[in-house]
Structure formats: structure tokens, C-alpha cells
Length: 499
Image (cartoon, rainbow, N blue to C red; front, side):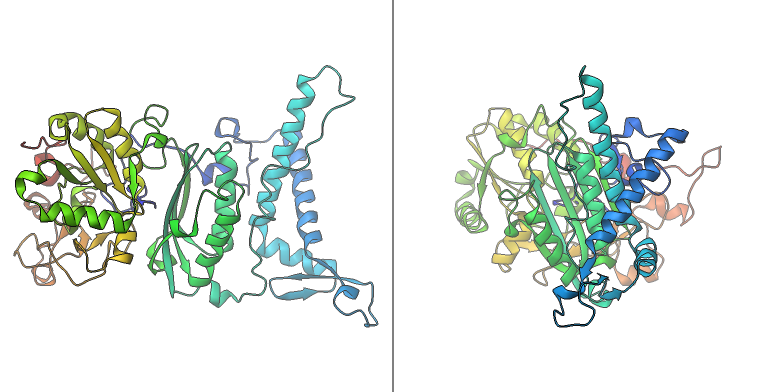
């Protein structure tokens, strides 16, 4: 996600930002699963059961996909050993193994590459469906154009890992990637299929959001696997020349930082809560490099309070993020979700009127749409934002004007470039910045409670939850539900700043 890339987009399963009703997933990879269901091009065409004709079509496509995969692994002996006595014979190479007969390669593919075959099956079925549409729309079928190939060839777009050992691909010594790319995506379902195949192929875990406006993701894996992922993303026709290597933010971690792999299709790649058709990323503010942003903040902090009133240094993140780390002198709205940001702007228009606004977030993606929304009001003297977000800023200025930790939307919760601690334990007030989930389920709020207080049993986010204990409440039907605790009940949804 989340900046995935701010992955406000993609909060962890335990994150308090994870169930915004305004942010509905349109389609997940589960909807495109190939093992038992026919993968039609869109969710509306999925069926629970096949009729006989559909089963036959699916079986034929699967056989063709299987044969194509095996054919791709074929090696003619004289191409590698021209003087050999076995000149002209055929064998197969796959996953660092050599197979001398069809039975062996067939068993291997069936056991280890069913996902790859499934992707190719889906592609073939899409091609068949496209041809059927052409047939039905023409009176004469004598001169029908035949497509040169399916729009997505997952097998051709996966990196060759036959020379890489499994231990190297699955090593826990790795990194977490954070990235996003705004671009026109004509086939989100096809991109979703390819992303799932690519991540599984490389043993990556994480979260990826796909929409017609682009892609936003955060994935973790071994160093080798993440390097291969970046290379493959950069070579994809959709992202070539648009997505750059520098757009991938990296931090120490790996697949273990995520519980699973989640890939879905949404209306927005970051949940602002407003249709991209109304507020487009194309209307974003002016990008500032980390060096330019650093100079702007330096100038801003060196001015007196009277001069500072002409500029606002605005943190676009949620309150629990800015609580543990932020730029000196910033305005950090007390909002719980990024989808509240438009309402925050609307309620505080006078605050922004005639001002220069310097915006920042984790990886840059929230500022893309957030600055576009602010600019749409036509009240600011200028709207600028930090390209690459705090992540990129800390790479260049680890001892700069950012204080504290950087919140991330995975199971690490925080990363840091220094030992600064600017937040405190909720109970004793001692310096502490390591979040954990409230011990009362299903509250799911994040709480700062130091080890000493934890040992005393103080592990909830507020007195109300502390009294309830660790057991989830239930409604009359016995189903667990999400409660409102003191933290959420007393917080103003959209704060109004004092000018």
C-alpha cells in the first residue's frame, strides 16, 4: 500500500484505517481465481457453476495453456552440445532441473506451475471471448481480423528464476518496497492477474491497489526477489518511461512484514473518498525534490511568526502517524482517515486562503490527490508537495527537519533514521513511540504503552477498553462487531483550526 504508496491506501489488517466504508474494493484477486471457476474478464460475468459448454471451453483452454508452458521450456540438445551424440534430441529445462521425457516435465509443471498455467488459461479465454464478440458483431465472417496475441501474457512477463535457488528467493534478509504510479490503466483486471502471478512467482507478500488511474503498492521479500520485481515493473509496457527506479522507496524488511498477499481493484489507488473523475491526479500541486523541500522548510523555520503566517507546512497523514513523527513547525490535522481530508479542507478554508501550502506525507501519493483537491478550491497562493514523501526526504536528510519515527502500514508499524522519540506512553507519560493494538477486541485502535505499563496490564487504548478486558463483545446474534470506544467517541471527526 499503503504510500503501499502511502498506503493509507493499504493499512495492515490490524490498522485502524483499514475499514473505511467509503473505500470499497471493487474486485480482488479471489474474484479472478482460476482453480475451480471460469475466469471471465470482469466480476459481473463470474458464475458459480459451469454449463457443459463452458466446462469444455475451459478444459480446452487449459490444455492449450499447459502445452504452451511446456513448449516454452523445450531445449534442443544440439543448441547446447553440438558435438554430442544426442544431437537433435529434445529435453526440457525448468527450475534448475533437466527433464528428458514428457512425463517428467508434465508432472513438474502440474505440481509446481499450476498458477502460471492458470494465468495463461485466463489469457486464452479472454482472447476467445474477444474473437466471439467480433464474430457476433459482423454480418460476414470471411475476413475477420485475428488478434496477434492476448493483451496480457503472464508467462512471458515473469522473470526467469530457474537459476536462482529457493533459499535465495525466500530469504528473510530483504526489503519492503513502497511505490505508486498514476497512469491510465485500460485493463485493471488483467493487471491484477499479472501482479498476482508476479508476486507469487517471486514469493512476495504485501498489498497492491489497482484502479483505472494507476497502481499503488507495498510488497516485501528477499533482496533478490524485490530487485527482480522492480526490474519487471520498469519493463512493463504500461509503466515504461512513466515509473522510474527512483520511484521505489525501500526499507529493511521482507515478506515477514506482511501476513499475506492482497491485490485488489478499487476506484481510487489512495482513498480520498472522491471519484478520480471529479478530482484528478493530473491537477496535482507542484512537486518539490527533497533538497528543494528542505530549503523551503529551512526558510520557513528561520522566519518570525509574523512571516510564517503566509505559509502553512501541512502534514497530510492521520493523527496517529504525525503523533510519533513530523516536521518541525508543521500543522498536523487531528484526522483519523485520509478520506476525511476533503472535509477538513472545506471546514478550514479561511485557514488556507491566500497562503503558500507546503504539503508532505509518507511516500507522496496522498499529496498527489490531496493537493489537487486543495487547488480545486482556488484559494491558495500556491500548493507544493514533497516528491517521494518523508521516505525519500530521510534518505537524503536523515538528520534534517523531520523529528521522530516514520509510521508505515505493515506489521513493523514504524521505521526510523534516528533515535528521536517525540511521543509518550499513554499511561505514565514516559517517552515511547512503539505502537501496539489495543488489547480489547475488536477495538483495533493503536496504543502507545511502554513495557513497564504493559507489565502492569495497561494494554488498552482508553479506560473504557481497559475495563472491558481482552474479550470481544458480541451482539445478540453472537457475531462480533466493531465497537466505538472513548478514543473514537470523543474525537471530533473533522477538527476546525483556530486562525
